Amino acid sequence: MSVIREVPFFLASSPISLFSVSENGEKVERRRARRPRWHVIALGAALMLSSLRGWPQEAPPGGPTVTLAIKVSLPDRTVFYIPVVGDGEISGVVPLPKGRFAGIRITPRIRADSVRIEASALETANKNLSEATCDEIRSWNTEDAGSYDGKENESLLLSGLDRLGLPVFQVKIVRAAGPPPGGFHHPYAHFLAFCGCAYPKPRSITDPDGSSASGVAGMMSYPDAGKCVQISGCGHCCRTAVPVLVQPAAMTPDQVNTAGWDKGWTNLLNDAEQTFTPLRKTLVAVEVELVVGNAGPAADQLTLKVLDPTGRTVAEVTESVQTVDCDHVMFVFPSGGVKVTPGETYRLKLSGGATFGWKYTVGGYEKGSATLNGNPLLPKERSSYLFRTFGAK
Image: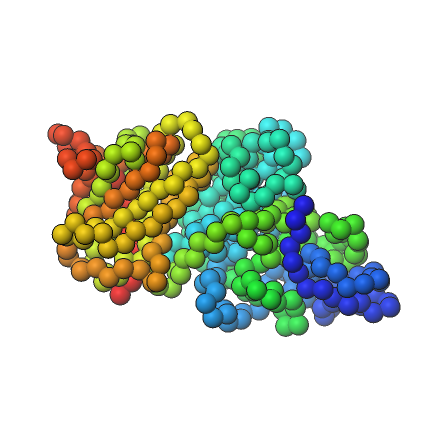
């Protein structure tokens, strides 16, 4: 298993407390070490207190904006803390001891000032969770357990897990916070983008390298890109190989097709286009809703183009999209977005292979329409693809 890079710490000849005493008086102690080493960080009860309360800190220049996190309450009252980083850059996997599912994957995605939490059950694969990379886990077959939207301080029940015969978790959306004063700050990762596990009572644990510790109130880790790291007591924290940096402070939903989907879709081998009329001066990102239309590879390269009123391409982004994670796909334009003229008609053109289909609905979005190969998608009815644009002033 690939263990994250973390702080090497020097221990005294007798056990010492890594952090200050908690409210219940418990201390965190580590046994004597023979040499400095890299390890998963054992957090003192000072950090954990009650349900991973942290300390606000400023984000490093140029790093991803991390403002929110989720706290997942597990059946044994352990709390799994997962930061909301971009469009699902970090996810948590709670392993299951037996049955046809290997674990429950929980992926939070930033959506302007709210969070979308997607839950799915991972079917058992040939490789154990502890041995798999983030991208390998993303390619495993899953069963959807629903998407849930909420804002800071809201609590949600992942009720879709019940129909799969799995325990239902409660999730609370909280303000992201960093390690306590004197706590470890990752040398290259955003120090708010860590996963954590808070135990209901201090316990003894064994690190992945075989060393042990007692009186531990919780754990924290910063997974490397493309890696998953095991956090004792909670599960696995995984980070995508290619970070998707979504800056929520600069993104505001602009044009949205709010109509419900009625199973209609069209493949992306043809020229599938959607017209829209922006209200904001900068187009920052576009989200499209897809479905797996044909069996094939586990991923496909999709390209989204933005065409201005004259038909000129003003922006273009290509993403590798996984079949297991295609319901909502975000295309973020570099350099802060592309300038557009409010009130003018623009076109979104989505292309790719035969794997995916772009969902559409009859009627729907009223400031534009769907076309296929230059003609109305439906010959007798107006239709629109399911999409959402994000803008900035």
